[in-house]
Image 1: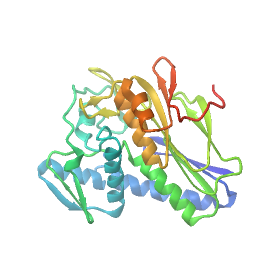
Image 2 (image 1 turned 45 degrees about the horizontal axis):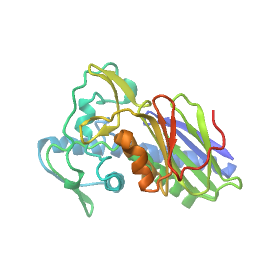
Image 3 (image 1 turned 30 degrees about the vertical axis):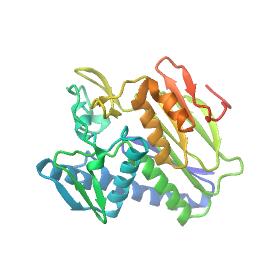
Image 4 (image 1 turned 90 degrees about the vertical axis):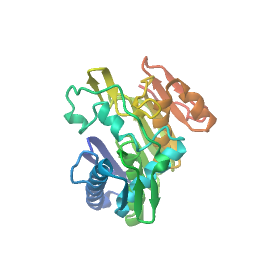
Length: 300
C-alpha cells in the first residue's frame, strides 16, 4: 500500500491506497479537490463563494444561486443539523467570530473574544433547486461538517475513477471506499498529542474524531475552542478532550462526535440511545465507550 500526505485547511490530509500505481493520479485528484472546496467553502478567504454569501447576508435577505460544490457542502451541513436536532449547525458564524475564531487557527494570537452570540435556527435556511434563501444577519460556517463531507466525496470519487481501495483521512474525519485490504483497514484513534489510544479494524465504516484541543486558543475571557454550543452561543463546555464515533459515512460519524462535545455530560447516554459506537476521552484521561464500540485491541 502507498499513502499521500498533504497539509491544507490548517489540518493534515492522509490518503491510503491499496494499489501502488495510482499514487500520481490520487495526488492530482486530491490536490485539485482540496483547492476547489477551499475556494467555495472557506470562511477565511475573501474570494470564496461562502464569504460572498456571508457578506450579502449582512446587508439583506439572501436569495442566490449556488455552485454545485457549495450547494453539496451546505446540504451536508444542514443534514448534520438535522441528525443532531440542531446541536451542530452551520449558523454559528457570528458566534465563532465572537469567540475569537475570526481567522485561520494558526493566525490567532490572543484575540479579545466576547461572552457569546445568538445562533439562529438553521431551519430558516432553504435550499431550492440551485439556490439558497437565507435571512439577513445569518453568518455561515461549514467547519463542523465540511471535512467529513469532503472525506466521503473524495473517497467515493477515487474509488469510482481508480482501481483499488482508498482510505481518506481529513483531519480525523475518515471515509473508506473501494476494495478494502485483506487485513481490513487499520485505523489508529489518535489523541491530540499524536499518541494512538486504540487501533480499530474496519472494512466499510467511517469514523470521525472531534476535539476541544486541536483548534483552541486563549481569549480575554479564558480558553476557547471551535465547537459552539448553539444553545449558549459559546464554545461548548470542554468535558471531553475528544470523542470518536463510527458511522455509515464520515458525515454521520462527525455529526455524532461533534454533538457529543456539545452535549458534555449528557453525551454518553445520547450516543448509546442512538446505537452509535463511540469512544469518549475526558479531561482527566478517563475513557468512556458506548456499548457498540469495538473492543480495545491495542492502546498506548
